[in-house]
Image 1: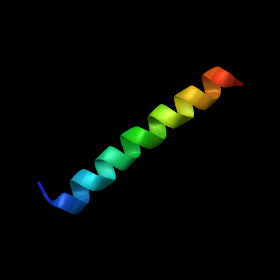
Image 2: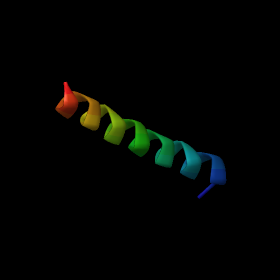
Image 3: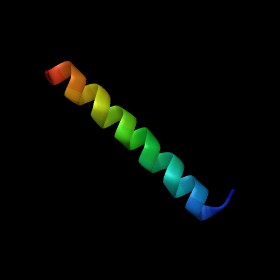
Image 4: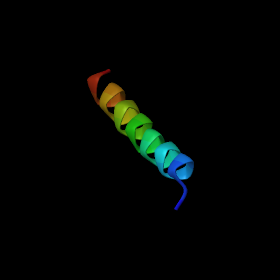
Length: 26
């Protein structure tokens, strides 16, 4: 797997986690 693709995947998972946390907080 390319490093760029892996980095994008991790970034996407982090964004999803943050969105869930924000939704739960609101």
